[in-house]
Amino acid sequence: MTGLQPSRRALDSLALAHKLTRSFRGRQASARALARDRSRFYADVWRRAAESVGADVTVLGRSSLRIGFPGGRLLVRENVTSLDDPVTLGLAGDKPLVYRLLAAEGVPVPEHAVVRRDDLAAGAEFLRRVAGPCVAKPALDGWAGAGVTTGIRDRRHLAAALARAGASSADVLLERQVEGGSFRLLYFDGELLDAVLRGPPLLRGDGHSTIRRLVAAENAERAARGTEVAQTLLRIDHDLRTTLSLQGYGLESILAKGTVVRAKTVVNDNRWDDNEAATGGLCSEVVAAGAAAARAVGVRLAGVDILTVDPGVPLDASGGVVLEVNTTPGYYYHYRRKGEAAPVATMILERLVGGSS
Image (cartoon, rainbow, N blue to C red):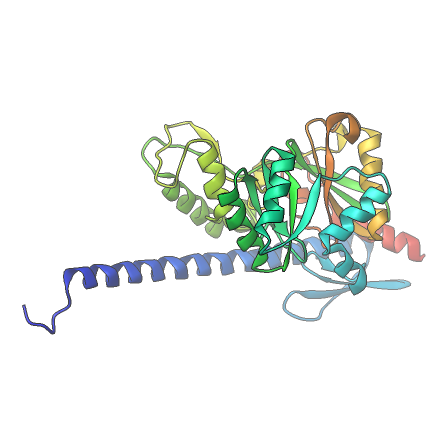
């Protein structure tokens, strides 16, 4: 062997780099394919809704539509609409401010604190005071679970969580982790249109595949079938690793055939069949709490996220909380789920057309 020939270690490192690059490019291609299908899903939803109310649709751009009707119009781009102004959207992105507004209206929110991303001492003091698992998330402009860490129990995990959330926000919101089902309540001008119980993404063992391979197979199905199955890929992130670890598993664990494990605590990456209709199970007090949350933030179209172990009793009785008020709520959960779909885009247009006549 001459000195010009690469060592075995160098060859192995190069092969690994090529493998990782191919894997990354594959995930990127799958994500782009799923994003395109998601755009088609929303375009179809809005076109069908416009047709049902006799409104006109003009294509403005790749994903942007103008829906015209006598006395008004609505601009839409997927789940983003012109119903709420930019100031309101910005206000709703300030999570600590939203919690203050909700608390002022008597709406239950999680016990929480705002700390600087580099202030580990303040974060550790909150963790000590709560004496239970906590959640860290960007205080400003968090999106779809990005930067969120659940199940924080010690100083080491806290330091990593602050860094993760702090990548997109100088302030980090720490809150007591509340147990219960994740309910999405969709309101328009204070009226409840629909409610969905969103379950966490699950993985089912086949007796021979590692969890890493199960995730890859799940994502291959999602990329191939699009929004028929899910609207996002199942991301291997800190939430997935932590959720698995708390159940005694890792990415290289092999699940026995038929074994079902919770893949993540944050529900954003779930499948259509992890969602189910929930309107009929809500008590009037829970519906009123969600409406009060939307009203406190001043949002016309709001997806209010509620955590509770029992939606049939008031939040104060169950220890439930309002977790978030979303100003550009997704409609996927209302159309793709177990149980009858709720055509929420049609409901929105019906109320706009009726209000303009």
